[in-house]
Length: 204
Length: 242
Image 1 (spheres, each protein chain N blue to C red):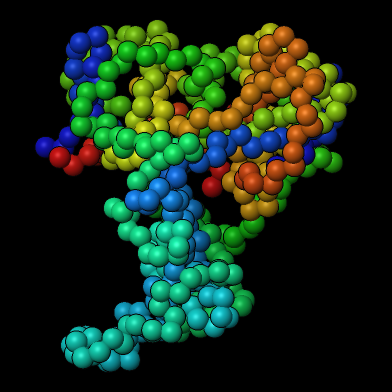
Image 2 (cartoon, chains in turn blue, cyan):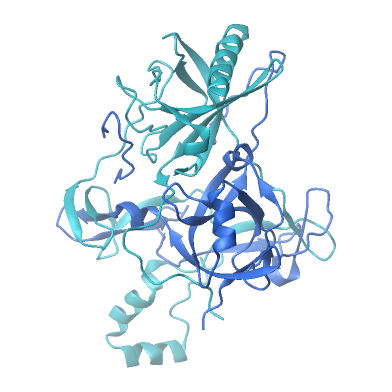
């Protein structure tokens, strides 16, 4: 029996399964086939700095090095914040009921970049919770799928199609600016025609 | 994303700045003495010593197994574990040779995986730049109706570059706030094309949100490439294994 996510809604425990929603499930997806001039299939690889050695898939690894340049395993390291204070790792959100005791507003929700969407499929009766979501309530809580260093802000809300969704996001650094604000710094780190009255999201 | 050109409801346009709003990483990994560790990319092995290459050289799996027991043919002690700097992405063919001229075909598939069409792959060309103003579409979506219809996966904050553009952007923010709506932002003469902010980048639908506080304003260009809706075909729900 797979483990469901459990919400604590006013003392009532509501079990729910998650179904990940992404573009491939909504609009399909695109693959790219690459061939050389002889029609042979090609794949991406990494040309090393020596100019002739090539690393293929799985040929490169990330390693932790100490300040002295010595190998360190992940287990030998601990996470700290910018001030050096230890960060307590979080457990998986599946390990304990998630209390729905904090709500959020539309502005707060829109201030986050949403990078994961799950459709919520209540296993049993969730009439009370769904009624609250239909009234426009957005619940906010920290969420971590597998546990780890930090949880991400997550929002439980009703989608415009009437289904409940769990949206996992990241906060952003938006802030009000006034006339006295300094000129913005140049920043280069960021990253089909459509019907006039319809927003076409199947951009593949 | 340094500069974009934006139009207001009066048809005026101005070049302004669109800044990234990503929050920098606030976690450091330290060792037992409290000193910060850094990550480094290292080489594990090259393709002339991976499984396929060794198997081709040995001729059979049992001979490869014997070779692995007898020695370390998979390991080049000169390069294994070396730090990687100044690398390049290249294509290699089935003979493991670097290919300098390739043809790319894009295969578009439906949600069930069936093939929809094949076409030569094209690199998306940017359609957002200071010399191409993003026109005022006039299409306003009430915030209460839009927030749960589209997933805003990224955003840029639009800010002024001088006193004139401060008043210009403040006016847009106040107008959108008064209407409690998001303005649909698109490229092209009809303001209906997806925004391609960089060459080869993901196309996004844009939604402009404005807020004000005293003489301050907040103008956010939300970017979305997915709607918040359930798929038509429902596969087995994803749950964490117990």
